[in-house]
Image (tube, rainbow, N blue to C red):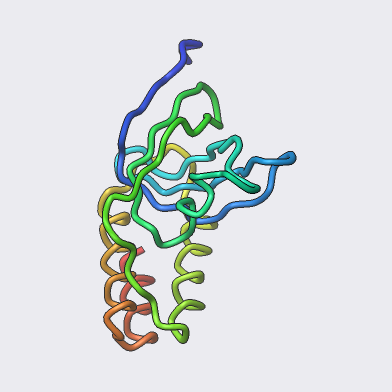
Length: 143
């Protein structure tokens, strides 16, 4: 494996999960269309004045940039790709279930563009008020 630092700019992705790290940062689990599931360190995104913090939420399509080597990299930029689908309150749990499936059933750095597209389509169906059960079963079947 090369020891050189890898830099990726503006690739489409979704935050699947985030957790606090140190005082003002987060560790993000991200699903990227071209790069698969990634772990990114997002520095300075928590607390007052953190402009990226509110953006780094599940179900928000993002254009993300990062750099680093090895298993985890550092988030360098993020911006909205488009407005997030507005999920009805009753469908939020189903959307979090999708994220959990992806966290448990995918491996890091394994690009799965078709699965990424299915995830995006399922979020849009849930936002449009589609039935929860049919949406989830179709996604599970395509896994």
